[in-house]
Amino acid sequence: MKKEEILLWEVERILFGDTPAAFMVEVLMRALIIYGVALVVLRLLGKRMTGQLSIIEMSVMITLGAIISVPMQLPDRGVFYGILALLCALVFQRGINLLGFKSQKFEKTVQGEITMLVKDGIMQLDEMDRTSISKQQLFAVLRSKKIYNLGKVKRMYLEACGIFSVYEEKKEKPGLPLLPPSDKGILEAANSFEPHTKVVCINCGALQQKKNKDSQCENCGNHQWEKAII
Figure 1 (tube, rainbow, N blue to C red):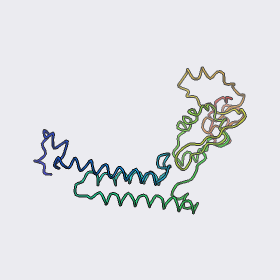
Figure 2 (figure 1 turned 120 degrees about the vertical axis):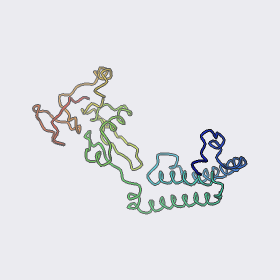
Figure 3 (figure 1 turned 135 degrees about the horizontal axis):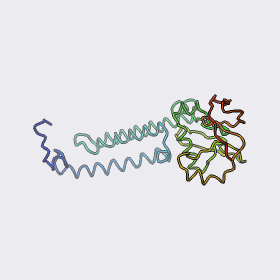
Figure 4 (figure 1 turned 60 degrees about the horizontal axis):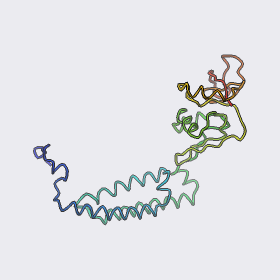
């Protein structure tokens, strides 16, 4: 389209483009056909496609969006080629799942691996750095599960699909408070939590008996401490 042909007051062109009005009916027909085929393909892709997506499944979903848009809107592109592309995406995704089922090594390569973020109430800082998970993200997840003391976390994993799995200690154990220090109201409400004689490293959550103000954390080498709570 040439520059001089662009007129800002051409409302009809802005809304409907240069295609004839009859093409709107064709767009509806194309949309119904592609939508129906897409529903079938998504059903065949499996329940995982409607849940938490893995990297491969997310890639397939993005591909489906790109595939669907062209045959639905362009008059010079046939619907058949869009359907063929959808079927190719289906075969690709099912094939990847089959290979992952038969080969654990292949599955780890394409899907990723589980990562341990907390072990026995101590944050695994190297793993958090590798997966780009901040402490505040980790604390937010734990608070959402009504855990306000890091010592209560026996294990916390970042699954390959991106969700967090948390396993709590069965017995009471002192640990790092997870309550936001800026919220004085929640801190006052936390007075029911029993303070512990030991302290925790605010960098990793390691619990130990503080000897003096310059004591070094045996786990990460940090020098900043906070009173542990139960």
